[in-house]
Length: 313
Image: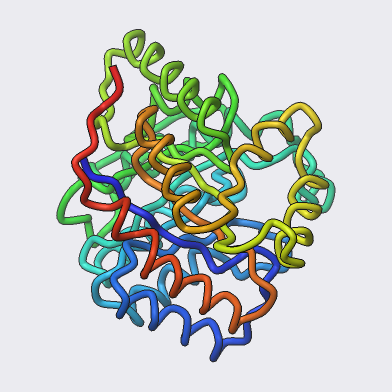
């Protein structure tokens, strides 16, 4: 079983281009497994597919992915071509995770599109993208997309792993029907373990299988004190965006404290069947993000990755 820790560019950190590349270069040289970018099309973050292409050129070893790409925002044919191109440029290191986004996202009001259909649209996008990446010719007819023509080139040398994100029964069913893995977002260990159980139950109905170590989650991280201003600012921001019913699980997902405490928290996730982590450092600025990344590499990753950890019963 492979346990891996990837990293995002921080919560609440506004990076200048030089600061971003300094951080990316550190992650590449320090041996961090992967870098992840979220999708806020009308937010203040950079567009993730463009960032993946730039990471393909800047790095030689690390993988990189989306956490999570809102499928309903994208044209599936263009997206398949983009992913195939980035896969070719990076020699297979691109790792997309798809989600449906939130009904409150400003995209829906700005475009007048129906947010209630985003799940059904996402299902069609994911299905069509997979077919375009894998097949010589594709015939697809859905409620929202139609296509009859060739698959995209350059075709990935091996099938691209498409994971699903989200914390809802619909997301778990989508994972069992369409996904190669699941990545939760800001989910406590108990909720993540329950998500895995629901996905595995749904897999018995779809007749599909998912690798044992293809279950993961994202965690806000601060190696330090809970009273740090960066923690308080990030917590307030995240809680304000989260529905009230989900706030309890969010609070349980914060990885804050001394290295030993964070290691114990991650080991608890692993013991319940969660094997992949995307940590999101809560940092005040670029230098603080670098310091948190260095602490992660020095104190946390060696104690979690490549350990002999048994699968849960």
